[in-house]
Image: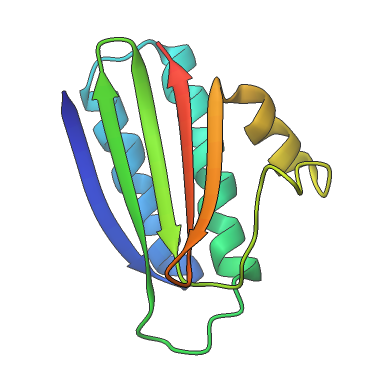
Length: 124
């Protein structure tokens, strides 16, 4: 099992920097291109939603990303302290969320300890 963990402040610049790190890391893992593409689409949509819609009032807050590659799947977990937002229940509120829900083999959401925790799994 291989994993990557990183965090970013809720700004567009830091989100894009984190997304670039994820892209480089995924490519280094020699995964199928289709899996990399799906995970990039999912990560970009969920990460950008945190920045755009999270209503963060403190510049010091951060979102945390964890990617885990197992022999048969990639699991992406995003944790943030924005307003509660369930991407599964809101999947019809934008093309990005419809694509994310459609590309995922499994997606779960919970709001725990004032944090959104979204976990997405795609099979490889």
